[in-house]
Amino acid sequence: MSFQPSKRLQALPPYLFIEIDRRKREAIAAGKDVINLGVGDPDQPTPEFIRKRMVAALDDPRNHRYPFDEGVPEFRQQAASFMKQRFGVDVDWQSELITLIGSKEGLGHLPVAVVNPGDIVLVPQPGYPVYQAASILTGGVPYHMPLTEGNGWMPDLGAIPGDVAKKASLMFLNYPNNPTSACATPEFFAEAVAFAKANDIVIAQDEAYSELYFDQRPISILEVPGAKDVAIEFHSLSKTFNMTGWRLGWAVGNRDIVSALAKVKGNMDSGQFNAIQQAGQEALAHVDHVEVKGSLDVYRERRDVLVDGLGEIGFDVKNPEATFYVWAKCPKGLSSMDVAGRVLDEASVVLIPGIGFGEPGEGYVRAALTVGVERLAEAVRRMASIDW
Figure 1 (tube, rainbow, N blue to C red):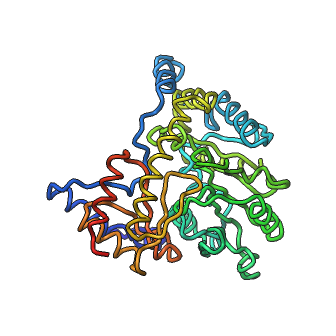
Figure 2: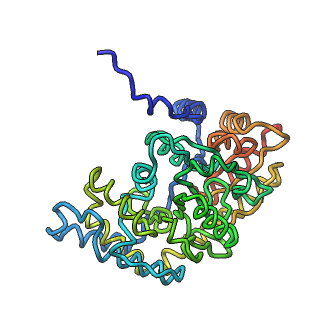
Figure 3: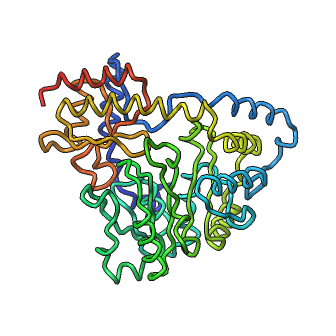
């Protein structure tokens, strides 16, 4: 047998972080003390009150069977309550909200529900690679919407050609944004909704970082009048509650889009373990718990150490509005791969090159605030020793 992967799989763009990964593995194998600022994975534990609820749920034999396909009703009700209390958005939990096995799973399955082969999918860059990959794997044709600092890291919808807009069936948005940490304005969301309505486009707004903010609370696109006509929004417990490994989130919005996504999921997976959903219900019921809010203070202290340190070295960097990422312009016009490579080789620090998030990310690097203050300070000291 001469096996060849499918043409769609072969059409995926190359993994541009592979060289950095190779150097990282070599450094670790050589016994170097590598400080990894590349992984967007919280280092703090899941709060104890959530873990205790999970233990109790594990002991309930009713949870040992197949889960509810569209999600445990109590979790969905709690998620709907969160949407109302946090954003002022009324949600019918039975028809407008479903449980996800993490928001990434939902984002990956959505194009199966709404994109026909040959349809254009509007994909922001720099951006989370899943948007482009999911589009390609379902036969969609990605059209890149460049995000620039001059435009507040929001796409210029007016620059999208009319013929492209008319062929598009889906547009991905992500605010608070990974990797830039930017937050969308109400005006931009309103513009996006109007654009989607005019061109019959579904909006998929990835709101995984809504509760990781430093000053002003990020908004939901569903706060915009008429957004439910065209939008579905994806939420995650991963970053808010340090639950990345638990794989739990939800999708909410237009009932027809939610129903289509639920039909895909019903044919592709059997839902998330009920016990995890019950623990998630406990988490959402206590989003203001001291253990949860304490994480923001931790990230704020780390942000100050890293942003101030990078600024002193010569990086052009601003305080992030939200997320736990710092998006920094490379010094002296160096490329993002050059900076990431030198920092790893000469300081044993891992940064993510912006080019890995798409061409508009060139000239920037991303650092995650997922190590302690002491390690961040040590990373800054090492990078400062490089002859930039």
